Length: 173
Image (cartoon, rainbow, N blue to C red; front, side):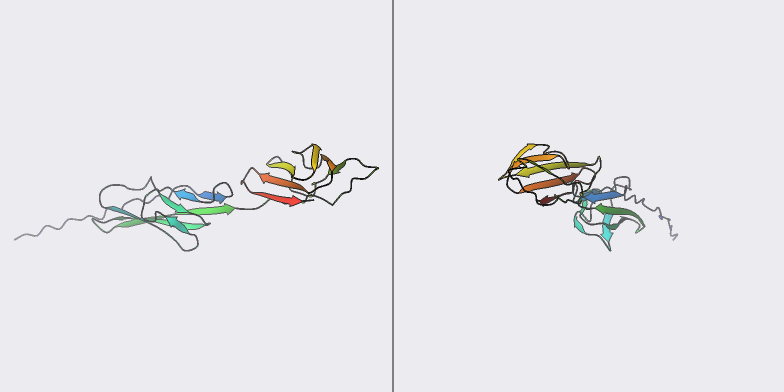
């Protein structure tokens, strides 16, 4: 009798997808290995040593993570045992804006209004500003950094939002 031996060492392809970033707008991201080999008998496993997998570790493109780190996609052909791996790096930008609503001010007989000054705060085109109060009165400038005019005693809050990462912070005066 003759025995025929065949060779099946075809390696699957693993492609962990593009690097992604976690920020205040996107506190978790979904990893996408959809450019990897697919088909019957193909298995997927996402792993990490320094990140955190919330769900979908054995899926191709539904692995949800919520921490910076390096994530490895291992693709295995269960028919021949061959594997391939690829990494994707997740970074995070959770930096809050600096908010300083300024010094306490006083309205008196000589000054019927005062101008709130948050100029010691983060500044730039990627920041939005909002002054608010529940017990005072804003006359004008509620969306400015250092031109908010008020004419009543009270607590005034300055909230700054960074549109680049969605992070925001608040300070009171």
